[in-house]
Length: 462
Ligand SMILES: Cc1cc2nc3c(=O)[nH]c(=O)nc-3n(C[C@H](O)[C@H](O)[C@H](O)COP(=O)(O)OP(=O)(O)OC[C@H]3O[C@@H](n4cnc5c(N)ncnc54)[C@H](O)[C@@H]3O)c2cc1C
Image 1 (cartoon, rainbow, N blue to C red):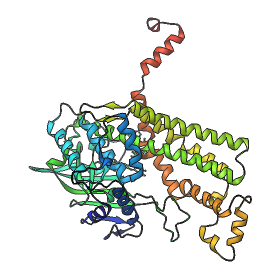
Image 2: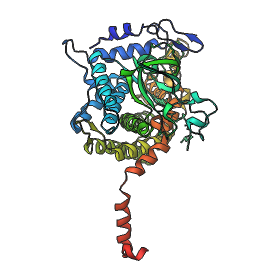
Image 3: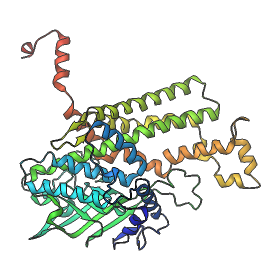
Image 4: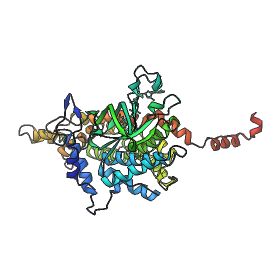
């Protein structure tokens, strides 16, 4: 296993990564992006085991509902890079279990790759979303064939790929880019039916980073986003060679969708589990700010917080249901229940705005205008800021300001804006979650119940 320091050292491998127009020579030492490497390193150290044959529990494959339940909080604790790596590993395991009938070497390579990743304790990011060009046209009918990542050359020992994968969380901070088709492919789309793993430092890979990390010198008013940020990467594959042993699908169009579906399931479980904790956090903030404002006993405030509690509890229930009703694949790997994951993730994301609306409503305008921590230290206005931000002798003005900063940081500033868009788009977007939920719902049972209520029989319908 790697220590945090070994992880940080491993990033100095010649990777080509860019931020706001400049190439980054020292990722770990970068004034903004270096923090991401630091948090990821802390996640390594937390789970480090010096035994020579130890492997990280973060990269384990769950085999039961209990394993799944134990894995989720560990991934939250270790941070986003652990989450995306686990998702990548589970995606390959789930896909491998569904690929009967295709070349057996693909399955052997996936299993060998998982073993190697576990042994080397690497971090893997999930590259699925292509540039996609004109959304109404399939890959083969685009003006630019590179709109979807595809094979441009075939050699005896591997293939050469070209294209780009966009919005890739943490791409510059992992070791490998798990690159898979973003959707189902049809006959004629063989060159776009490519799934493989590419090292971040492979010749031809370039990554452009974006981040919501606050640019302020004093980041105390950004208690969350100044600590936790994982830049998205715009990953360009400019004629990148991939050796055979890292290729998991090459040309078999009818298997392309298996990768996207497998990743979607695990990515949405990750999204759902994050919503579960975040929803409780929003409830907690609503209660704390209501108490600080002196409104906690007022009926409309209590009703809003009750609604928030119901939302938080319902989505927690969907996660529990997804774990309890997990399925076991042919080689014993457990994967969460598709119906509950997708319905829960959809519901959590689609109703997040209501949670935030209640929170903003309860908190008041100081969410946007509370004086900064440094203002409280100013000799001329500090004491007055404290006096007027306080609401009673029991509620300190600076404490109340910090609650407001936390609410702004989480829901109404750069990170909050990122969160609003991410809720809708990440995990394939709400549209995809709706489709998968419908696919796994027992419609026949629903129709039967409806028919029973009519008092008619099937035969009478025709
Ligand atoms: C912060 C963030 C992190 C992300 N992390 C990752 C990551 O780590 N890895 C990764 O691979 N992806 C990642 N994504 C990408 C995410 O999965 C996509 O944004 C999402 O799938 C939508 O794709 P798009 O952005 O290209 O939008 P579009 O595909 O353009 O979608 C926009 C809208 O158009 C609709 N639409 C598009 N095409 C069609 C069509 N043919 N038929 C019907 N409706 C259509 C969509 O349903 C949607 O409503 C991330 C996104 C964000 C915002």
